Length: 415
Image (cartoon, rainbow, N blue to C red; front, top):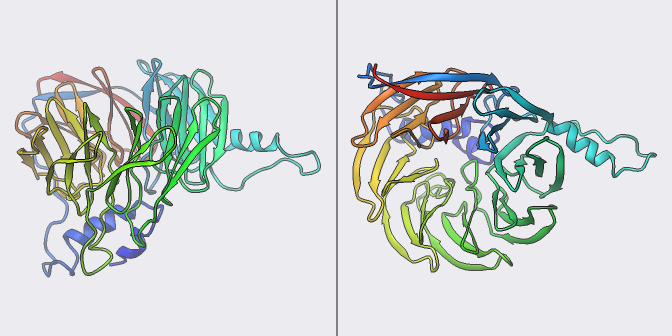
């Protein structure tokens, strides 16, 4: 099955493809070679019509590589990037470019300024390999790379504000808040930096298992703490001022006869609502934890690696089979489920103009009725597929395809 090769920190998108195939359709679990593993799209009674507001190219996208690179909306702009190093700011209403930089060149110029003239001009032979971010805050755009860079750009001009090397790849969004930037590396480190100048403040490190899913959970900063889900299936909160662990709680429990069966990574980002933290693990559970103590308020048996959506006293999630669920926020009671898109590698859900929306590997966006989960609308944006949770700003949805197309979409009523 070549599953182990795909799982062991590979940078290629086949990680999740191989994992899905291994757990749902390979001979280890089924003898039926005729089993349909990817749901074909069926006709729908379309009650809303998505319309493309604008569309533009942002570099070459991420290609076939695993990535959680996402656009972000802030300061009346949309910021987006490609894996190679193109970073752009665009007017959020028109899609017109405001600025564009090549991160690879920016970093090389910055490094060259630290070299003496005998050394010549520094030039790395590797592309930027942007994979973590984008996050906009403090009039800056923060991002991380597989090369182990953490970068802050000026949000108005795209100029390099600071750059530091974290010593390990960053493929999850940095957490920005309370004057700091916190990254969670794939090597099991959580590192805090000053948001203004990039000076390191503290490090926290945990032991990673031999076999993990590709990716890591983005940290979340809340109430003086840094909430982290790790590749052992453990949720922790670190004191933001010094990085000391305040509490820890198991969300996924590694178990099984093989390393594959024992995967329990927390790859979805923690969601904090009031005094409750919602977290979900692969081969684990969906858990509601008390923010201050880590005490379990409730747990439910769901397995996922995509981000959650918590809104209107409900939790929406896409599990590892690409089934979509709606649960009651207070007790985790299942309200409805939709399994019509199984195997289509649905992104994490987002809330768009009263509907739940998710993208798939063929480049379709699907809008679901919040009341019962039925499919209300669909749009084919192509671009070799969608991989990141859609980003919503007001009534506009922004999504980025694997080929690098950045698309703004709005809804109109009717077929």
